[in-house]
Each structure stands twice: as structure tokens, then as C-alpha cells.
Image 1 (cartoon, rainbow, N blue to C red):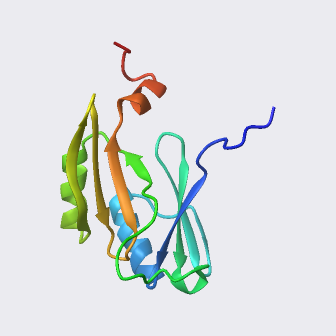
Image 2 (image 1 turned 90 degrees about the vertical axis):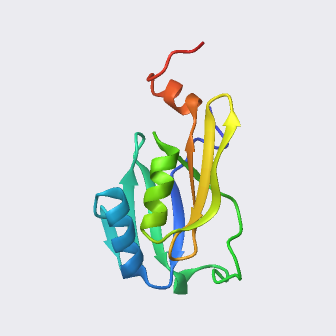
Amino acid sequence: MDTTLRGFTTISCWAADLEAAKQWYTDLLGIAPYFQRLGYCEFRIGDYQHELGLIDSQYAPCDTQAPGPAGAIMYWHVDDVKATFDRLLAMGAKQLEAPRDRGHGYITAAVVDPFGNILGIMYNPHYMEGLGMTKKA
């Protein structure tokens, strides 16, 4: 059976200074990219080994230097939104949305990394249920 959207594979972020972005994300994630080639590097992260790709802005299919952050926000599950948010700010990210309790156990926040990409973080109880780490009420 074909499924239209089978799952998240890679999210791409753009950076005019790819080497600086690669180092920033290496410091944030605590791991080096597992794949690299000219103008691109990729990290495998998280419980499902999703891919975070960093691409030199010169290869962007559109203008990535818009006057402000825009577009869809990809939220990464984190165990502690406030602590992760504070760490991102300490590493030079700028606040886009402060941690916000959305009810029923959901907490979200978003920052703009030093390269202009939006990085969303979230505590999502359904994510934890999917891992079998919480009990359904």
C-alpha cells in the first residue's frame, strides 16, 4: 500500500557560513555530521534518527536572506523546553517565541539560529507515547 506521506526524512537549513553552522550544530547536538560533501552536511539525530541537513546558502532554490524568519516551523521534541530554550539563547540564537504552555501537556518555543533558520522545540506527550515512555490516561 502506498502512503502519501510516510514520515519525516530530512529538514534542510541554510547558512551563508556553512562551516560556522556546522560547528554551531555540532556543539548543540554533541555529535559531528555523519555525512559531508562540498556545500552540505547532515546529522542523524533523535529517537528516529531523523536527518538535519545544513546547506550552503548559495545552493538555495530561493532567496534565503528574507528580512525576517518565515515559513513553516519544524518542531523537535525535547524533554525540557525551558532548559533547551535557555541553552539555545546562550549559544547565540534569538527568541522567536518564548516557551508557551499550550495545554494538555504541550509546550512549545522557537528560536532563530545564528544563520537565520527557525528552530522549533516542543514537549509533546504523544511523541512520548509513541516511544512507549508514558502511559495513556
